[in-house]
Image 1 (cartoon, rainbow, N blue to C red):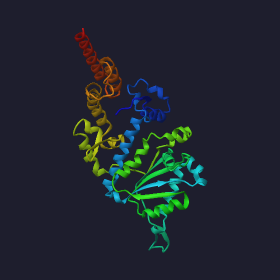
Image 2 (image 1 turned 60 degrees about the vertical axis):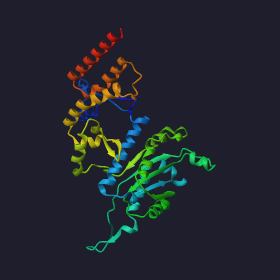
Image 3 (image 1 turned 45 degrees about the vertical axis):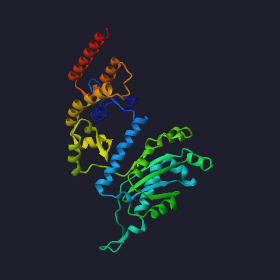
Image 4 (image 1 turned 90 degrees about the vertical axis):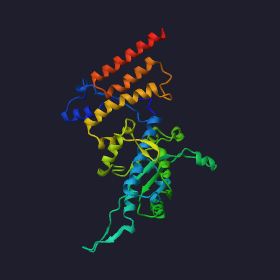
Length: 338
C-alpha cells in the first residue's frame, strides 16, 4: 500500500527554525532536505494507513491499561434539529460539553472530609469520536428521505458509567444516543473505519462539511507509549527490516506511527536506520514484489521512481552511488536486449 499522490513540502524543521531566527525560510533552500516528498494524507491508501495506526493505538490503550473489551462502549450519537446548526459548525464543542457533564454526574459527587463541602472526584478515561455524515443507505432501506445529517460514532474505554447512564446524559441535552458494550476489538475497528470510509454523502454536502467527514477527536495522550513499554517496542522494531515499520495485533501487521518511532529512537538513530533500511525495502517493493503497483513499468521508469523516492533518506554521496548502480544496470539490460 503506497500513496500515489505524494506531494512536495518544505521541511517543517526549517519552517520552525526560520520562525525562531526571524528569517525567511528560503534561506535554508541549499539544505539537501529542504524539501520532502510525503504522502498526501487524503487518498484512500493514506486514510487506510491512518486508520490502522489509530487501531494500533486503541489496542495499546486496552492492553496497557488492562481494560477489558466488555468495558468499552460503542456509541452512536445524533443531534437535535434545534442544536444541529451549532454542533455542525463546531463539533468539538458539543463533545467537550458532553464530557464535562459526564464528569459531573451525581454518581461522582462526594463530600470532602476536610471541608465538609461537596466535590466531584476526578474521572478520566480514554475515548475517541469520529464524525460521519449519513450516506442515505439506512434511510433508503427504511423508505425514508435522507438529509445527510452529521452524527458521531465513539468508543469509550473503561467508562465508569453504565451504558444507559451515558445514553441519558446525551439524550437529555444533545440528541438521541445508542450505547452498547463491545464484545471484542471488532467494535473498535468498526468505528475507526469511518476515518477512511468512501462516503457518498460528500456529493450532497458542502466542501467545508466534507472535510469534517471522518474527522477524529481523541482524549489527550490517547495511545501514548508508556516508559516501561519503550524498550519492548524498540526491541521489536530492531528484529528485522520489516518490523522497523510495524507491530502486530494477533497475526495482523499494523504500521507504527511516527510518534511511536520518535519515542523509541533518537533523531540520529532514525536517520541511520532510515538510510540503511528504507532503500532496501523500496527496492524490493519496486523491482522484486510481483504484486507491486510498479510491475508494469519499464526498468528505466522503475529506476526513475526509485531514485526520486529514495533521495530524502540518503546522503549525497550514497545517493550518487545508487544512481551509478542504476545506470550500470540499465546499460547491462540494454546490451542483453540487443
